[in-house]
Length: 218
Image 1: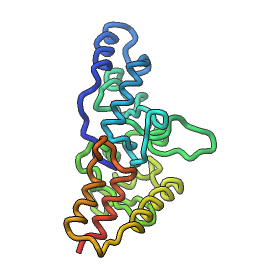
Image 2: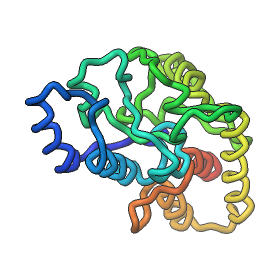
Image 3: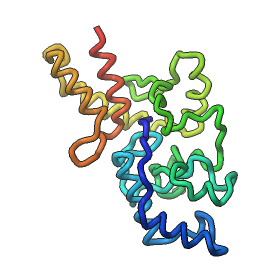
């Protein structure tokens, strides 16, 4: 999971809300294109083109607008609150395909046991193994929330473990860890912690940065 620093909502979305609030059609269910499409694209860019939960690369066609606090348990105002909106992988629930992230979370939300990507320290809740697993931290005050989040979002299903493992192992196979200077190591880690010139994070950047930091710790 990568921290998401929420920015300003798109002007078209703000304008639509100002008009919709004066009508009976108030709530997320009434939001349509082109405002919905632009909102979706802004959310993806804001996240560096990765899923808000697992870190998989996303585009509009492979993702959906996610409500951190689900629509079914919130009032119409909160369903349109920009700080409650994210972009999650998997556009729809598909038969015979494993679900995870926002689709798996569905209507569930427990504020005490859900690690949110809007928490600045959300990355501290998780440990990444080079076999592709994501694990809860050993810190007692974070462990329960991390474990519940991993389970509820299905972040350790075989599909995601396999993809993370391949990305991590391909990276490590291409790097001669012992041959890098301290400056080169620092730049390498920073390359996965920061978006590129086009505003894109590397897929599973949080997992990769964690693994690299483990290799580089004396």
